Image (cartoon, rainbow, N blue to C red; front, top):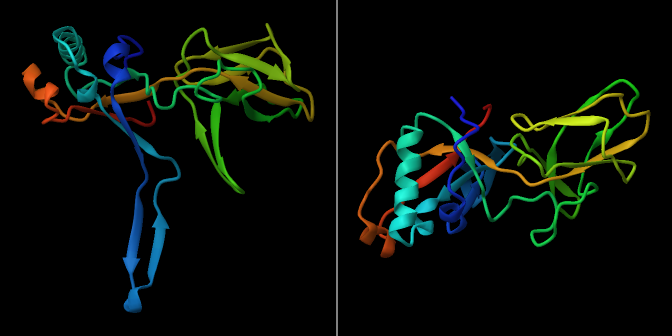
Length: 208
């Protein structure tokens, strides 16, 4: 089950170590050459939140959240401070940050996405957990104050009237990562966190 609330404590998430990862099948052939097969089109993110525990208060917040969601049983929202905005990390979201698609006069629904580009390569990441109150929308670069709504549980933007043929639909937003605790166990000694000898991680969930 996915719980829209409670959200993982921001103070603890702020110090987390974020690690996006892919799964690639690599077969080594004779002569040292290899074949690589990318099994995942999207990265799966893992956050080691033990790095965010610096005080007794931090540990108490982590413990409370762990018990509230019953360990790994329920998924929840967490802010990945390494990547939580539609545009540049230090800039407030703008309605032209990310192109969602082009109008065809019939389609009213567009998925929020974030695009990662390097040269001619691009990966398009669906954003399903936008932060409520942060989504901005534009048509052909013109901000739209009304005529649309967003489902913050799915990241779907729905227009009252379908954008006309050829109209570029874009959006800006902040977003959370849908995640769960990686383990059903939580070490409790603050000293362990202070010396960094343990790992308490949350891992991204998909389809929720």
